[in-house]
Image 1 (cartoon, rainbow, N blue to C red):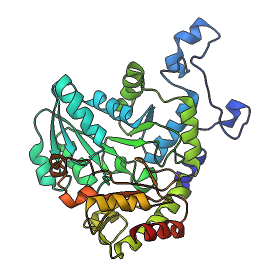
Image 2 (image 1 turned 120 degrees about the vertical axis):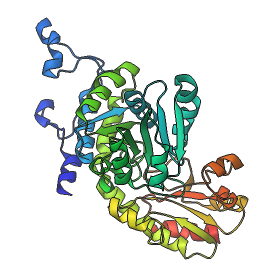
Image 3 (image 1 turned 180 degrees about the vertical axis):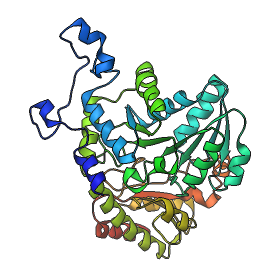
Image 4 (image 1 turned 90 degrees about the vertical axis):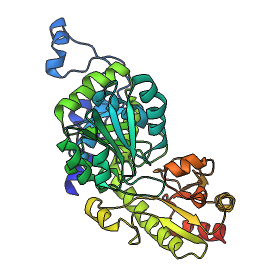
Length: 387
């Protein structure tokens, strides 16, 4: 943890470069100037900053920290998680590429695959349940370019054998991508398990205060990292703003303390829900009852504050439970200081439920994020709402 703590607090920061300020400044500038044309002409060799769309000193501090945390060679920050995902696709795939995608990845990822990459770029997508490695291998084609993962996935918190997927992909020359937002760089290291591209949505735990939108990719392959940094991001313009980068740097300083507290609270809440007579099923990676508990223990070193549960009753009764909550507020995100609750599947069609391999009863699934208000407060709130 000492190495990670240094990355959270000091990596990338050089106080002597900004008047010995203990906190780096926000470089709110669109361009940088030079003393001579010779300096300008040689800026690539010297690594000098030129234009804000290509790079920014505050953004680079953030990138160096995340690269160190993920044990990568480079991290590249973007204006949102979806901008980061799109950049990964554009860096690896081309018109006509075949993609293998987990069924329960982030919904907008499936949205852009089905709504843009397939009809506009002639790509094809095979969806996989994330469990059987034999099935995964059977889906591979000669033009398969990328395998898209999210582990744990955030509806029923299923996990993927990350190292197993990476091994299969490497054998076929296929790139792999994983959304590692849930675990943070502290509790899971996909690059060490052979994954090519790791993505974090920074509105979640990295930011931690529900006040920024951003995404970041981390890689070990220097050539891939260079393409993302020097071509894909500046060409498509998805640069993260310096103020958002500064807020993410601030969030990283307390990341380990916050996720430890989120985990402590969530473990108490999950245990309470698992023993509550009105609750049929709890989905949380920290529970020994999780059907993939052995795999989770192999590849995760911790758990965070997000979970789901299904009550005994109809979906409309689940919505009534959410409406009765007082400390848990109704909201679609997670990973901030606040506790949130939502029934994300109430509007799902039967086709969508079938696609996700969920039951009709799961339409009433309640997803909650355990914030930093304290376990006692949240347990009391859940008790009164379920009662």
